[in-house]
Amino acid sequence: MTMMGNKLQSISIVGFAIAFLIMIIVPINVSAQNCGCAAGVCCSQYGYCGNGDPYCGTGCKQGPCYGSTLSSSSVADIVTPAFFNGIINQAGSSCAGKNFYTRDAFLNALNSYNQFGKGGSLDDTKREIAAAFAHFTHETGHFCYMEEINGASHDYCDNTKTQYPCAPGKGYYGRGPLQITWNYNYGPAGTDNGFDGLKSPETVANNAVISFKTALWFWMKNVHSVVNQGFGATIRAINSIECNGGNSNAVQARVNYYTQYCSQLGVAPGNNLKC
Image 1 (tube, rainbow, N blue to C red):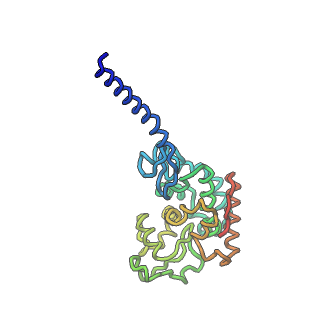
Image 2 (cartoon, rainbow, N blue to C red; image 1 turned 90 degrees about the horizontal axis):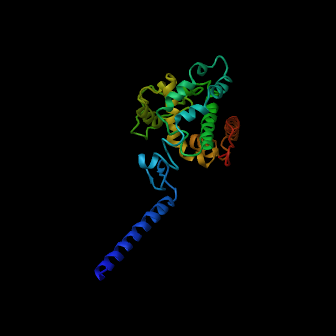
Image 3 (cartoon, helix red, strand yellow; image 1 turned 135 degrees about the horizontal axis):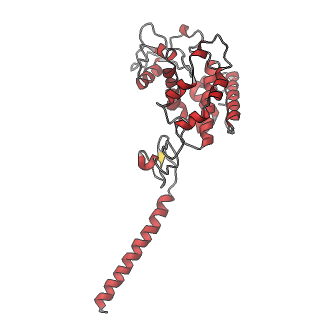
């Protein structure tokens, strides 16, 4: 073989070796990336942060994954008729909410907020469901109340929030499973859920699906991202004035419901239960 031939053969062997090393090393490096994505961002099967099919689809490890992770149907499997009815059946027969709130309305609303209960393990999903229903139970008295007691005496109008101007004669007091209040919550909640929250806030107490959608809107906007910090963080996100001795009885009541529902769902409640 000529000298030129030997050189070409050597180059070919070196090139093949480099290509082979790249094939081996790159997948190792890619798969070794750490998952530490921001809230609402998926960690792909190769460890990169982003959204869309390459990140949230097959093999997605963390975040609002779909396809290979828990879906809204899994929430429906956990929030069984027995679980839901076990709460609402504790409301008195005279309670208006007893004929208003339904499991079907909750599941219907869930279609608009299908990231609820996602972002972690099955146990994480169960804890988020237990937390949400603990707050629903406390805020509504086991789904008894559709509106805040004596709420009409408080209009909850913050005129400094000029982008959400209060409508004359309308009160933005507590309504729905989380007793949403204030014009600056009714306005955007209505925009996101197809009703005029400023001019028709009463819709939250007149339409059960909208009622649950509004609660889930608030939850996903303010609470979902702190669930992994412990139940106490969810109390602070919903009603911070109860924390730090503001209303220790209310805090304990919420914790009691949460631990009860965790027990029913067969999951440990975790740490940091109080705020």
